Image 1: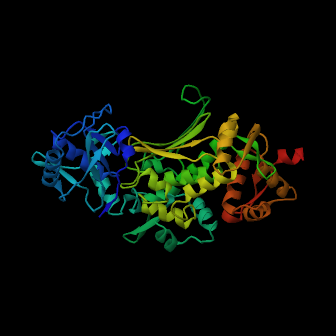
Image 2: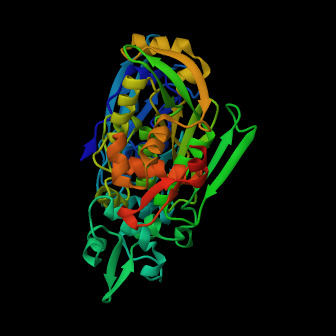
Length: 485
């Protein structure tokens, strides 16, 4: 079975990439087979024969001879045996090009290529086709078989390696009481020789120090004053804490180092909105945790520039998945165990949700859409800042012309001033402590969002945590706020 990778004439003008390769001629068909194998094992792609690396169109002198040489080489050098799809394309210059259309090869084992007397597996990284090593090959097999190492028992540690209070709090927020059956069905733990043992997924999401098992399972945050990394104004490493806490920590870093802007939406009163959509950013953070390749030696990264934020996570797109498919809601979870936990906790509800939320934020508030791309063995998503932040009225008008809201930039303010939500919460707490559920009901948001806001305000000293545990914890105004009011 394969995933179609249809040819488009626009590809002729594209640079070499993880889905396009150029060959001047078919005089070395074995090299073409290497690229075919790499595309088949990654996301699919096209080999264009008759073009130089610099884009010069030289054409194929004898199409049938070139086609026969490629077909013979592919059939004799692939396992399982592959019969290539070859197309003829007449360029505007009048020269004929040969196009090899390569679909992503689906199967329990990746496609193998015979190189002399040995069988090798290739994958595409950027514009290069590389032979994979044994560790990478095993990772490819796990993904293709729908299995991963994160549902396996973790290192030789006990359940005390997990933050039990966090587990109870998270499951209480969705109305579930924690017991051994729940922990096992949620992939947080497994029973080994009659003893409940944390899974690798459990250690990552709830472990006090997941880096003891996965040393790069933390996030590096940075804030820069311009559009490059020349001048860093703030940084923070979110380490030695469960990845669920890392999500919250990344959100707090973003809130501390970006601001809000007052905008006027057509047909609505002026309102204050953050530089980046909180809902979209949270979905992107959850996706990064859920789909990362924890076998890679690379950390998560959140970098904030004056015009954008970049979120980078270890691992490429899951095999066979492209950016276009991500935008269309196609999902192929790399870490089944982590997704199981996140789905149980309602962090993950449906495929394609991040793109749906991004389009909704664009339509309602004019937030630009995110862009995904592979950077080496990592995936980076770039989110442009709201166009009104720098007074980009041309972008705002273009948004309105495309059917989005008309945005008139007004006053930009930092998060040091109380946000509208914070003011609402302070008003609700003015007459005494309230539970998270009570605050959520009063201001019209979900309990998860209310808990996040209250945690941020607690970190900033605006509210204090009172008595109670887990989902019953109560919050009240801090002494400093009480004195001011």
